[in-house]
Image 1 (cartoon, rainbow, N blue to C red):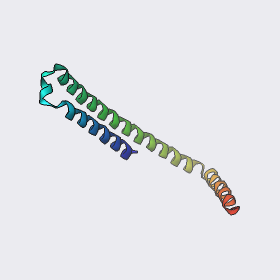
Image 2: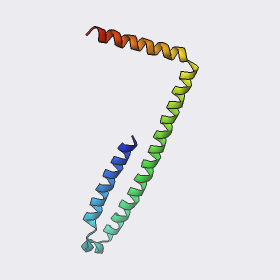
Image 3: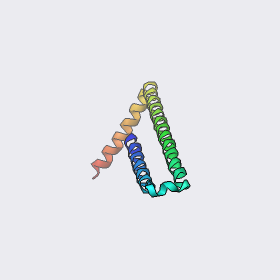
Image 4: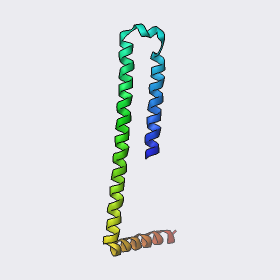
Length: 99
């Protein structure tokens, strides 16, 4: 998941860099709106970076919580878990045996 987030962030940063390259022309420095646009792009990228980091941390926290819950369940209900694994294994074996 982190790789996907990093990839998306890299693509977004490349897109913004391309856009900044288009509006970086010295000829455009005389246009007041260009300076404002450049600042909005920079501010937007900063916000996106912060949001991406927050989302990655939240996803990691949720994954950790889920792993802890699964671990707790496996320790609290080992026979139920073993029974479910046996049932699934039997079903898979039956299906594969019929082929």
